Length: 161
Image 1: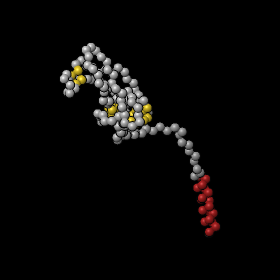
Image 2: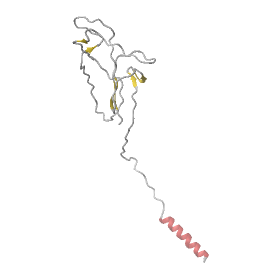
Image 3: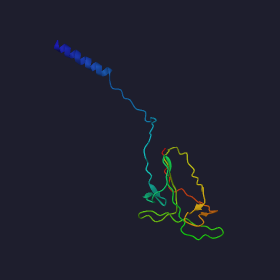
């Protein structure tokens, strides 16, 4: 009986192995899927050297705004001491000074856009009052105008994707 049981078991095992042989399957070599990534947080307000954008500089305190599209640095324009005379005169603004080892640079405004939309932006500047100095006899410089004649984009981060 043991021999018959062993033979039947062996026969059953062999027939199972023959009837259930392995199947080879191949995966599709290209698969497409979609995902979503969201970023949040503070991106810092480091002011970058306009002539060497990889370097962080310290120009001192400045008015700024908050949010993903923001103004991070605005210079305090200085024109030195000049004599007031009749007629039109052109006075160039002094260069932007920095703390540390950075040499003076031309005046600049730093705007950062972390919205991730690629929608662009426009910066507009308006002079709302005449130049004033409360410590002088004639405390208003009538007819004064600030003009920003040129601009250049110095540092851009390309959007992902």
